[in-house]
Length: 452
View 1: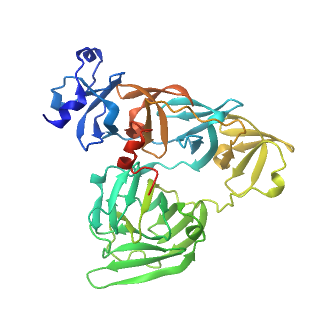
View 2 (view 1 turned 90 degrees about the vertical axis):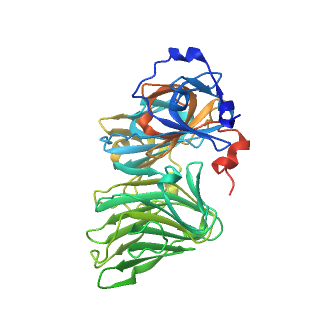
View 3 (view 1 turned 30 degrees about the horizontal axis):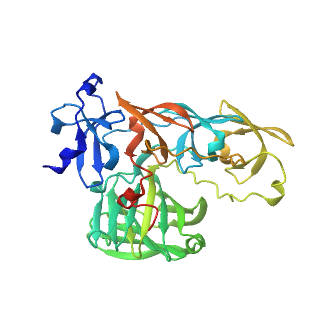
């Protein structure tokens, strides 16, 4: 018997569900390595309704006991015109993206294009970060099939929403970027960091292309070199001065940002929101650059996640210090860090027309949301949602994740429930994949798991 056959339980009554040609296609990935393309449907106690060409469009049910994930394919997200983007961190590790809309004693409200207004329990939220609105051109990592690998066989894989290296080698992605762009990602490692990032490479299947900017990280020291080759000449040169980055020696995880202007040859490098170095290529037109970017592991393991590439308007973020002044800690209220490094402490009121009102000992202070950087929501009464067997973890294309009980798919929508925000209907275009059996530790090694 074909082993795929045992995954299904046919339920004729599922024909009552209306299947639309507009339904997004997906790919079910199982713990035994099987994959099946098709259209997801309702969730029942028996499993997940699934329509596939293999089954001659006869809806059947996938038993979810060994289902790892459903990848959602071929969808794009609309532009963000809110002027800012809020990243709300939850006590269970989730991150929800949207427009910061309101705040009271019970709820933080985000307005999202993919789920409407979400009222998130304040006791289940920790931090609210405001970032400048940039239309994402790429978020990932996406499927391993969309990357080009070189070096030792099996050096890179994708697990649990992360690129994972366990051997030396390069993994590359081709992406058409504008002259001014912003690339960011999370980088984690063990012991000593030895890592390279190649930008604007002309070859994807090697870690030594003829043309590229090559960022070299060797423990706490980082430098940028340029490689170029033309019909007449070629060479390699170091650009500017190396940077000494204490975070790369003191930690094993950082968030990195690169702001690149190819017309001026400027590359600004930020570590955990701090401007670490700015390099300037005095001849940016020299060379035949391409549109590949590579991650190269020279020591491993490495983990790379929350990759995001977007157009950039050209203004660098303020190099603000996120530390709160000690004399401010005696004041009562929430701590709000502003983009310019200032700190405001007080009782946070509502948001109206993009202005947040803060009642402080100095009186009411109106703060434009776009000028905010971080709002500390930490509470003594914080709580985490109860983990339920039927919970799934949805990964947003623009970064972040949401955990909830999945009830159904219908007409490009996904219906679910969470103790954090209640009932919600999500636009499927927002999600790249859904993970199932997320609390089953026996399946953790197939996703990458919490361990190295």
